Length: 210
Image (cartoon, rainbow, N blue to C red):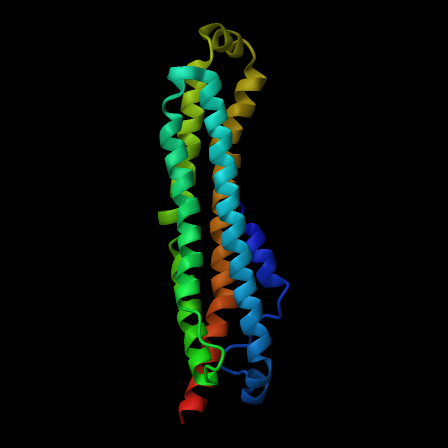
């Protein structure tokens, strides 16, 4: 599950100008951009939900091989499945909010505005509902695996300082850097893609209303 892929999808699209956008161009390009947004969110939700199910299935297989001592993996699986359920719920929400084929341009603009504001909230609160549960699931998985490792392994590991240094480097630097990178990438999506597009649609809505 990598939201850097989501950032790449946004970057392949033309970045929005914001409030300085030309109204005629906004009206001309609105429908193609609306379809692109819907397709992007559809792909994201299904890929993330599928990835969560795959990870949970892998954890279940590890648990089966470990036997009763692998019980903490149940908590890790629950966290991963909760994330998958969240993305599936997003699909149901989008389906319920789908407009009728004959909807007016104003109704479509307002619908996209609500969707983008919702996505901005999700991206800015990523730690609460996505990164935090992922980190907790990884911690439970690591704890379970470490419990199953025989003491002789740890005794042997202490005699290899280089291996200990690499493990410490991964836990202290590499893993936090990966999570920070995902968080920073999605804030860039908000700053460079979502918020300027919201400004464009608000400008278009004001024109349509007036």
